[in-house]
Image 1 (cartoon, helix red, strand yellow):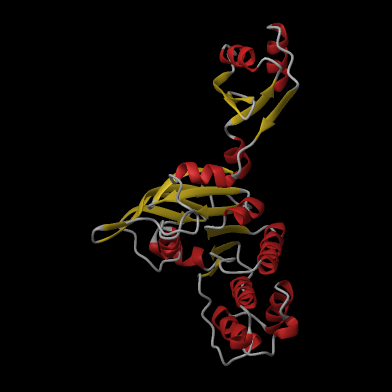
Image 2 (cartoon, rainbow, N blue to C red):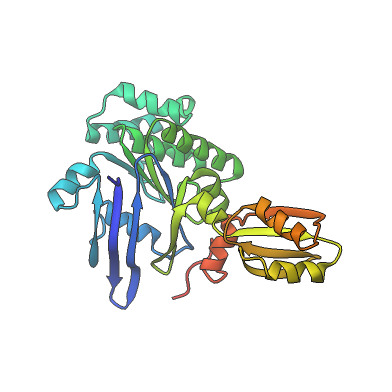
Length: 306
């Protein structure tokens, strides 16, 4: 059973379609990245999952629950942060967590445990307004974890952070995953998603463009780079290779797209046709390259054109 399953989820605002027929599933234990440019529908989708935004069409389930009453119980098993943490600026970090803990009926011991997890025990007495952006994000993560949720939903948790802040957030997310949590996070930060997430959906203008394991998405198209003394002869032989769907010359080598990553069979094929490569290696795409292809070159931090 999927922890989150969306089926044709759609949200329209008058003439604007914010989320358009989105379908995806998040399985238990995954760190699932919801990746797209600013304005692509990420936050709207999270709003629908959390009950803040009413879908125009389609449906979704949390822990298999899809009726209004059952979703209330399912959301009690969920912790979430929004892009802008909402705390009282003149209260300490600990006191802000106490307010959240009272709502969630969580004891003080759990507050201290969560402060330790996010590395804020030493600043717990300080006012929230004195916190750096990274500390504010970490306090939001602590609040999301208070009730020890099974599912944690994070909206742009590393947005605006410096490299050290990103590393801290990444460490916390990985720690949650190691404790068996399922994590759904939206982001436009490609490098962070590639380093942090196990699975990803790429969304553009409200539509899901691609979903899968990060390793499959970046390695789904098997590319090979081959060099030999006679580059034209090499290209002709590669064009005839049954396992290659395309081949071209680039920077003094032949770059080919293969149906599989079996380089041994390719090497034997080339030798059998009198071509002895000086270089033969697989080449994987980065998540950024896949993202740019699917979004027609829209930079990840840019807003979608309306």
